[in-house]
Length: 445
View 1: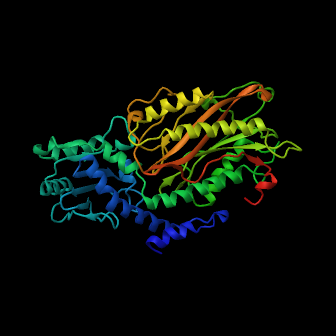
View 2: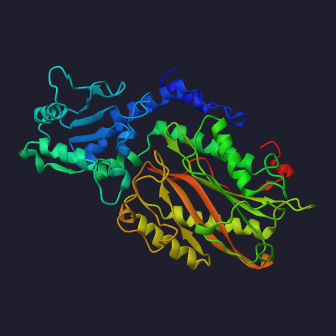
């Protein structure tokens, strides 16, 4: 099964049965997406950032985070010392994808090193550079973007010591090129991303149901480990340990308002609780990150209390304010400042801490606040929004609940896509509280 047929197969997956591609077909999808990125995305990124040569150097088990996203599906790690060279000739509209390695780097990057002809790997790399005479050579080092700081000290020093002096001034940080590679999503990837988020929503819906939770017996920790087991049984992975927490009346909590850093663990889930989870999966080299809410119905209740339904509406309003302020080339700090000001002016109490999402969970790109940095984030928050990027729209709003004699936080997180046509959620967002047990109108969903 090749090419478009693989993608069509994914679209037709029966997610209610949680059917996940077997490993062989996953590999075909990964390699197809990589080919598309190398052939169509990479030349544009190199032109946009002004590099005609990009060099990535890694050794086995110590991979550059960017190079790791380029590994062929059957390569779980780099081999020995792997050196990739991308050369862009804009005038001829060509891009060379070369590996200074003993083997082809999968089907997309061909080996350009015959060790029998030239035993020294560094000398062969220099030959390739001299033959092409690039104007600007990019290496992956960066002060502020950790994923783009992949070249290690020993490889950098070895490269520079072997590089002829006339090229030294042409070596520059490939920070913007690396960010572009990491943050930009292709059309093919976005078809798949919709499925990933759908799977994530399905797992949360099952976790926050009577299938998993028995009020008075099940603990928050039980649900967390159920989610881990569910993901493992599906043949998938999580990129962080799930968390589940409870908010309830002040009397029952002892008026304890917990922060992000001191969340109570192993709490028994009771009727009347507002549950919250933070959960994400990794599949086909993409990641999700989602936070949703559920209410445990009390005896004779047929729906969540109106005050909690209204509180969720406040959270949705903060989402709308925030995403309506997105604009290409606007910085994360600007979007954050405008959104917080507008939210406060409407009488809300928002906090916004949104991050890029994609090949990494906490990815590279525009940072839009941190939970402990609501005044803005230096450098990464000054980076501008670009099109064809995905973000974990992560935020909360504090709501006073007189009936509970306390404040609660409506904490939400959904994958959102920013593109030429504006903002959209990758696979919808939560606008109604899940209930345990499910109320009749939700039966069968």
